[in-house]
Length: 332
Image 1: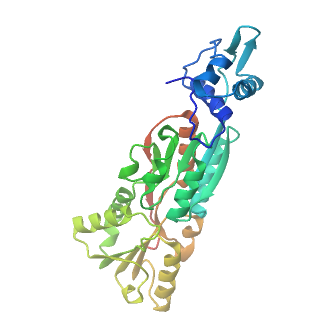
Image 2: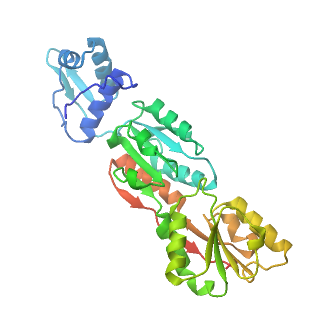
Image 3: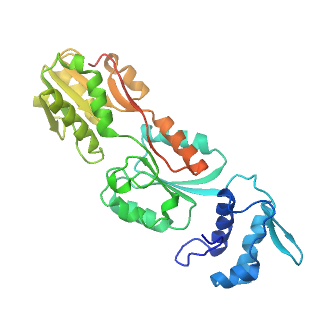
């Protein structure tokens, strides 16, 4: 790999590309203490740049204490002990209480070590593609939450592969990118398996799955579990009042639907945990006290953010499954 190479199609300024090129070479240990850098003329000629552009980059590196110059001899590496200056692109689907926990965990790990810009695509494919296209070349790392949007790989492929990290949801097309993610199929099946002994008190298991935001893995894990133990089940797309009968258990990813199920259950004078079972997705403190406690399947969102922060800062390339657990309460 050339030490300093300019991407003419990048939207990042050419002098910044040179600065980041030296930073990358230092972090990857391709440069050592007191190594001589290519001369200003050599870099300018090799990349079709003006001497002023190269000089601007070298001056910035000098100001930051990374290189020094000797009159008549050139520029040399001065320091290896530095925090890599990073400008991070963080793309979320939306901001809710769970995503805020991810963000806070990420921020806690990053602290003052990088500059961070956060964006939201709101589950809109066009917004997703536009935000990524406009960010190409402007950031040192890209942390992306693709959610269940279709054709995300095509947009992400425009970015430098070595600088992309996937957060929360991933899929087969994105398997080559490092990630901190949930395995929704495995988590759903494992959670239901852990409470199988309690399900025997009910007649039918429902998954309320609108399919707009929720990952398809939830359906896969749900159906796999029910098929394996031959438990009567149904996937429905909204709250159906006629399904809220004695002996029904509801797995509810969406908190608006959780409220609906509770309201209809109470209007029918049915008791949650006895006549109707509820398993909610994603734990928040309020679910500890609602109706004497709502059983949840949930990952540790704060830890997910911290893990991603550490991975980005270290430059490691891993695919890590963020652990999930079921919290058993009175609703089941």
